[in-house]
Length: 411
Ligand SMILES: [Zn+2]
Image (cartoon, rainbow, N blue to C red; front, top):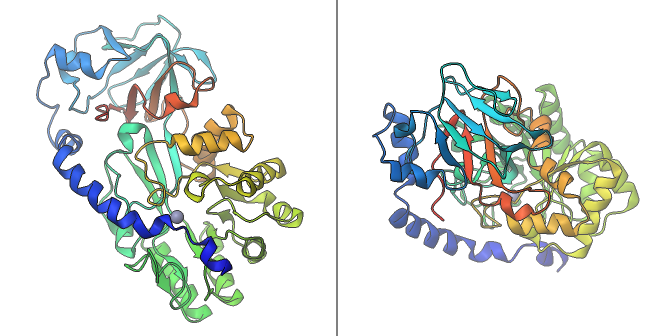
């Protein structure tokens, strides 16, 4: 009944699409290997000038002598200068990435001691790299594609426990919850998440032990679902929240209705993993004013009640984080559908851009998502002014990750 309507029907057919995508991707996208190969190799094979011209389209080489190290299928090492662009929210400034990959702002035209190749980014905007605060990369594995699209950090809000100790992905900072802590046979163990995406507990002691184990294994956040009973008991939720708070982290909750959004907040959860889809009461919006909400509008159809909830939470002062529920929403970049839904919710372009850059950077204490002098360069160059047209954010002209210039995605 009610519960059925809340389940997202897309989840039923996503596994088929993921399978097809994976197969196609393996056949087509051998260039993803380039990132790892170049990382392992020293400096990379020398590239022709023609290849270099390809990588810098929408950013062309204007001077400097190190062009042979830059190429479409290679990761290009610093130093280099991004010349002639606008730094987002700061105006015209050149950006120098030094040999250690550290970012330095230059006055326009200011030269660099020793020289470095310059990439012309006039007419373009240099932005902090992007953060998707709700993904499922064990379910829909686009982890190698995201960095090339400028998404250099993500928060994985349900994955099997083994993923907590997996090898890091080059150029992608990944915070992870590991499996959701849930009741026996609870969500998502009987639907899309039956292969380890839920950790079932039967008592407060087990809940406490599970939370402790996940944090010990490297989880950065914990997650509790309230979707399709059985739910955890209040005591079990409190046990998870207590462990999280004692360890300086937070609990995210999947809570789409008024009743469970209110309950989760009263029990100490800090993050709405989705914008609730059922109209929230004023009291519940108020209760979440000191918390955070991850948008995930497009994945749930971006209905008017959902958009209205997000706008009201924003007005109440809730921390607003862009997130796609990647895996439920199929994308390997910033999602134009999500950006457009955020606009329809009444957010300004500036607010939307903050929701995948500075806001999650501060909220999750990530170095990605901000541009700061003398820090490792993680940035995205987009064509034109992103506040005038958010669509330019989806296909960046250039991406610099950990100081390295990444190959462009195969478009
Ligand atoms: Zn999710």
